[in-house]
Length: 257
Image (cartoon, rainbow, N blue to C red; front, side, top):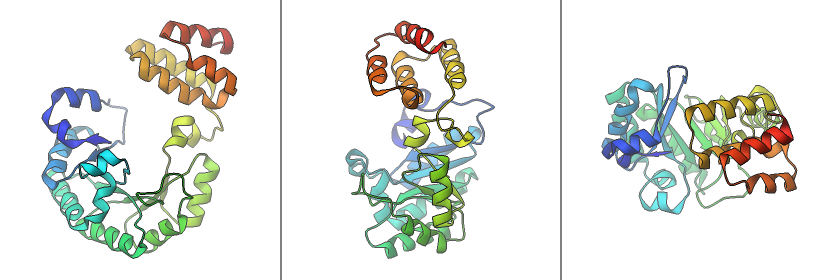
């Protein structure tokens, strides 16, 4: 989720938040925005490199809602309608939204239908309200949205394996599924692997080092990829390593990478 205001105003923010390459397609760029002009301005900047733009209407973090971003927007269907309409007209890109559900599901249905009439290309639904964090996902709510929409609907929430993806698709009748934490823990999930193969990790390490990826995100992403391969004790040891050299030495010694 890229904050559109800083993305528009700061070349440094643009360089830090958005990079891509010719093989990185199709690509959807997700923005946090609080006005139609702001979203459209940001979308115009990425339009030459993107295949669609997504408006985040689901982030439940307090700072985001305080700024008028994320899940704050599900209470403002007219504003979202204008944001979708203006961005679509100015960029000719498909515009999508990702939402959370309302406590009153009638409001959710009204909200998504307003977005559809504005020209939204598809909608991703996280099956929790903005106040819920670890509550069970309401897949019936996602199913209800799908039953009341003509555009494609994507389900999100607690999808951590291909089995979860298949189960949720069957339960809800949606056109696709989205994973967040599940795909971070196992980037090879959608390729059908229960855990990320070590060959993938080896390739990633080589590419990251050649590109000079800073150590902190490098270390963090390695932890995500290695999470399912290590015991709890081994993860604690790995997480205590304090340099990229130490990480590489550990992987070579213990995993033959």
